[in-house]
Length: 206
Image 1 (spheres, rainbow, N blue to C red):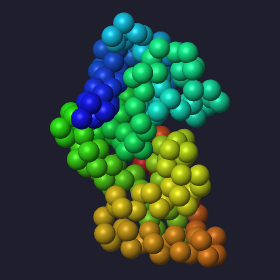
Image 2 (cartoon, one colour; image 1 turned 90 degrees about the horizontal axis):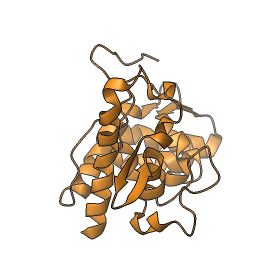
Image 3 (cartoon, rainbow, N blue to C red; image 1 turned 120 degrees about the horizontal axis):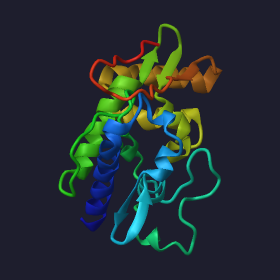
């Protein structure tokens, strides 16, 4: 229960931090220099940036995809707050972008169920299996954080299957078998829409 409480607090803290900056943000957080490093809160006497929370705490102190080094060094006092990585947290973290998962409420009591639901909902929207054209389309999140789900495209696809609707699971297994046997299936990743999810902003049609 203590682990679940800690995880749920930090999952909810990240969108709260973004919301505090919402009115001052331009059309995308990418247009704010060092947004993930400079946006920070004081928690229990320690400073945590958005990057610290996502990669240091919730991803088990794993490096940012663009870095080789973990956020917290071996002497960092914030290591005591690090959670065990649950890959499903990727579908709970919200930065306000159009391509982000839907915001939800996470508590110690509902954490597992809420993460399960969030992952299924995200995969329903962002994972596509086209047996007609032998193509698999995935969210860019699976590419950026592939190491959290496995080591290869195959690992990622296998990881998603339990979270897909039954008819899509059947397509996935068909494509997976073809990919493993013949390598004739294209695995593609959707472009991430970083525009802020404000009123009047429509998702990109790719």
